[in-house]
Amino acid sequence: MGLTRLDQLYRQVILDEAYHPRHHGKLAKPTHEITVRNPSCGDVLTLQLQVSDGKVVDAAFAGSGCTISQASGSLMTDRIIGETPQSVLDLVGQFSELVIEGEVADEDALGDAAILKGVHQFPARVKCATLAWKAAAQALTKGAEHD
Ligand code: ZN
Image (cartoon, rainbow, N blue to C red; front, side):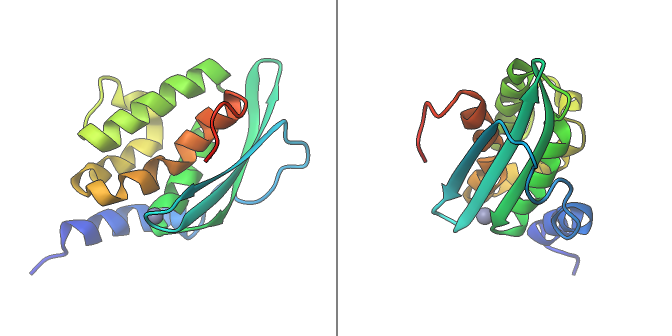
């Protein structure tokens, strides 16, 4: 008997991201901040962004939640630093498509975050994976939506 697919997915993402998340904590000078929740799992995530000269120059997340949500927060923040807000919105759309459909036209654009594509096999966990990304989109569109 091998590992279940869920075990394999967890093992894959746990190792680097959830136990040693990048960009976890608070920024000194955030320009955007938002807190989002995923009631179906209990994940709570606060995202801070620093946007300067038309780019996301820094990002950090804090909060509590499942392994998938924490790993996704780490991967998301690491991916969007250096991008323009419009590029971030594009990436959010591509990431959502990847974890819902299991494939997306330009998977390479997502970098390490593409590791979470296996989430598409577990529809109940898709919201865990997309939480941090939706937070980024909401923060950059200036509170157009509430959680
Ligand atoms: Zn979760």
